[in-house]
Each structure stands twice: as C-alpha cells, then as structure tokens.
Amino acid sequence: MNKNHNLELILLPGMDGTGILFKPFLNSLSQDISTKIIHYPFDQELSYNELVSYVQKQLPTDKEYILLAESFSGPIAYKLVNNEKLKAIIFVASFIQPPNKLLILSKILPLSLFIPKQLPNVFLKFLLGPLASKEVYKLVNESLNKVEKHVLSFRLKEMAKLSKNNIETINKSIYIQGISDNLVSPKHAGKIEQISQESKLYKVEGSHFILQVNPERCSEIVQNEINLLATSCLGKKLNHN
Image (cartoon, rainbow, N blue to C red; front, side, top):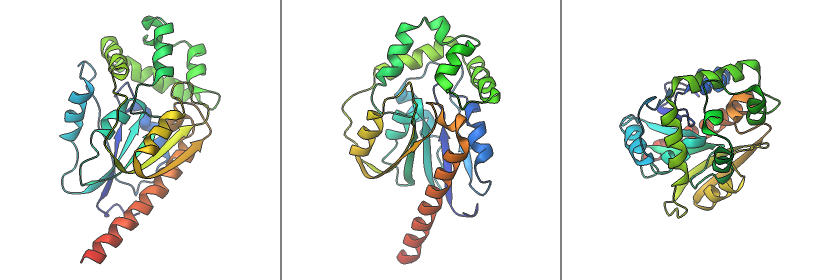
C-alpha cells in the first residue's frame, strides 16, 4: 500500500497508555503504512468515557482510518464505531466487557506487586510467555515506570465497571488472539464477532502481549488487512465517481 493512500492506522495502547510497547510491532510493520499512536495521560485518572472523548479529538477528520486497539483500549475503540471515517477495528488481545481473568489476577496479587516500578522476572515470564525477548522485558518495565501507580489502579477499576450489555454494531472487526493469553479469555473475541457485521479471527502463537512477542506475524496480518481495506475503499470511490 502506498503512503499516499488516504488511509491511516491509529494505534490505541494497552493499560499503560504510553505506546512504548508498540515498538516491536511498528519495527516489523511496513513503512509504507501511515501510523499514529494516541498516548493517554500518564498522571490523570480518566474514565473510559473521558478517554473516548480524548481520543475522538485526535482522530483524523480529512481521511479514512483503521483503529488498532490493544487490550485495555478495546472499549474505547468500540465506543467510536459510529464514525463514518472508521473503516475497521483491529482488536488485539482485547475485550469490550469486563476481562474477568485479568481482574481476578489483579485481586489475588497485591497492587504493589502487580503495578511496581519493576515487575519480577518470574511474573514477567508468566505474563509474556517463552517467546519474549530481553528487549520486551525492558519495554514492559519502561512503560510502567512512565505511569503513576494510582492511574494504573484506576484503569483496572474502570475495566471492572464495563457494561456486559453491548448493543452497538461493528461494521468490520479483526481480532488478533494470543493462543497462550493468560489474561483475556477467548470468549471476548467471540463476543466481538457476535456484534460485528463482518469479522475475522487470527489465532497467533504467543501470550497476551502478542504484538510484543510475535510482532512479525501480527504485522503481517495487519498489513494484509490494511491492503485489503485500502483496495476496497479505492474501488468504492472509483465506482462512486
């Protein structure tokens, strides 16, 4: 796909909100794809509704785009479905209802362990799985160090308050699921599929942090889907003209 095509990939980060963890994925993604990361405030307790408004103000108004929502950001992307410029949502290890496995883990472990300045390697190994490199370990701790603890704690509470009644329809969804995801159950991909007019599911080897531990396969999927969407959008414009 040519960068001159009027279609942009907007990346919404996981719970840390920094966008730092997109580095391995973006390094594997073709430079021909136009990308933009929307970072969340490091020191402000913004609710999901407030983050939706925060993101909406930064979305392009003069071009069509795709949202890539990682983990925590799934509900944000979902609440933006009614924008005519939005051509698809790529959910990555994400959800639109409370992720019970993740929330149970955060209750079992003391917050000081779950959200410290540096996660113990044993815990990181559980979260990241065997495919993670030392660079990924460093990126996780770097991202956590950027964000205030009270903000991360608040975001966990926001996930617990998500509604289980989802009525908005998604035109097109793509879901990338880590086969060994310890934090988000496969049922969340099924729920998103149920409310999508058109959907695709990709099961990829790796953990919840699938963009970080298997960036090559994820970038291949995203590139192919963007190329298909770009071709479709161009064809519709030519037919309209």
